[in-house]
Amino acid sequence: MADLIHEFISEAAQRTPEAPALIFKGQSLDYDELHQQVNAFSGGLMACGIGTSERVAVYLPKQNETVFALFGAAAAGACFVPINPLLKPRQVAHVLPHCNVKVLVTSAARLRTLQPILRSCPDLHTIVLVDAPAAEDERGITQSLLTYRDFCLQGDQAQAPHRIVDTDLAAILYTSGSTGKPKGVVLSHRNMVAGANSVAGYLGNTSQDKLLAVLPLSFDAGLSQLTTAFSVSACAVLMDYLLPRDVIRAVEKHGITGLTAVPPLWNQLKDLKWSKEAASSMRYIANTGGAMPVATTRTLQKALPNTLVYLMYGLTEAFRSTYLPPDQVDKRPESIGKAIPNAEILVINDLGKECSPNEPGELVHRGALVSLGYWNDPEKTAERFKPCPGRLPEIISEEMAVWSGDQVTKDEDGYLYFISRKDEMIKTSGYRVSPTEVEEVAFASGLAAGAAALGIAHPTLGQAILLLVTPAAGQALGAELEAALLNHCRAEMPNFMVPAKIVARELLPQNQNGKIDRRALSEEYQNLFQEASE
Image (cartoon, rainbow, N blue to C red; front, side, top):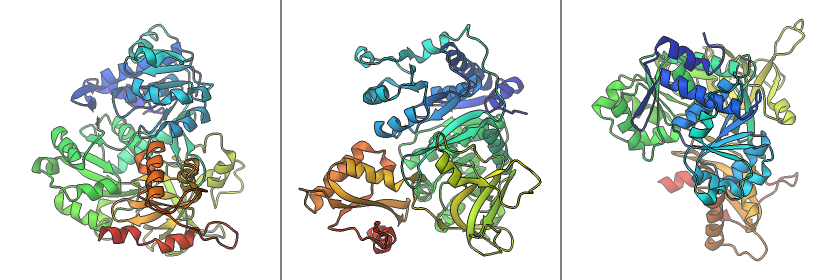
């Protein structure tokens, strides 16, 4: 039984070395080959002097080297940091120095965009490129610059990896908070192994499964497609899709048995025709990253009558929290289910007591999946990670639980229902977006004197971002200002953070404390995107 996340691969290589492990663009690697590649990257890290738990960032789309580097970092005893490939240099410039990244794995094209920010990364000493750089790419680079092949070859005679235990760092996943810059959620090997085993258990995964990895590997549910597959010696198929129809084609081509996606993708897939071959191979589908509209669930059930449907809820801070079993989907489709195996979910009221049935309260997650907190952020860690209620006073050390900030209720049968978030986080296209981060980009443009980013209900995205601004001095209200600000946002932010609409106003209302009255603005624009879709 694996204790460390990379041991899923090494143990599978011992049991079934020739079993397919990873497929990317028609190339298939078996577990023995995957194991060798992971060890090669691990050796390269040891040769360049990586220390225990030091951070290795990977800024690439889904491809073989991404997987080799993530699990190779873990095998070396380092800590991997997957950076969403959609992020722009502005966001990457926060991640690299924030967690003191030592080694960066990326491509020559991406490195060119990052060159202006590298001087702000004093701890970064090695850059590994999956392709060959042009001569001009090396100008101004003070870090050691190696091709991926040369990096791995230098590790042939390297020392053995660092000895680590399951409570040591495995990964840092960056997730937006309701205010300020993204936070780095620190996951231990124990967190990730427990999460993979739990998810594989309730999904019934086996070595016969083929899982289509369509979500970003920087997203906990996306990374889970790999860890869950490897935990049972199943096969993961990597895919960065361009169109929803490509997903169905991939299901058909590879005989995919399991697909996990977020509501915006399911909302698009439900309206497409599933071929007989695609429908027959799908053992289950799963939703995460937001509530699945009931109409979407019903349409998918009709299109895939022999496919099990799992509705899930998760927190990056605890990897995965609840799931609704397929036999309950018809009975209570709005429910987020019950606790996953090896977790307990409590509903706690403002007095710190467990709620009665149907009494609203905060969802609190305890168990082996609770992460180690936020990297280098004791204040925010103390806000979200607090002692578990109801623990025995005789136990001196306190167990930390994740206080989600989400309001839920629990019915008489123990099933949970999501109500709302307590903070102002925007949940769009399966991503959590900080309003403050969007507003900071608006201010940096020099076009806005005031700004308020809101999450407004949207029929396909869950929430869409509405950015309300007041013009800076010398700027006039109107479409020209809104268009200029939108262009600035597109240049500075990944697509999922770009506002769906920007509205310039003379004033932004204030509440009695002198702050922007976000509640009043949300009520004023609450039907904006519903009306636009009609």
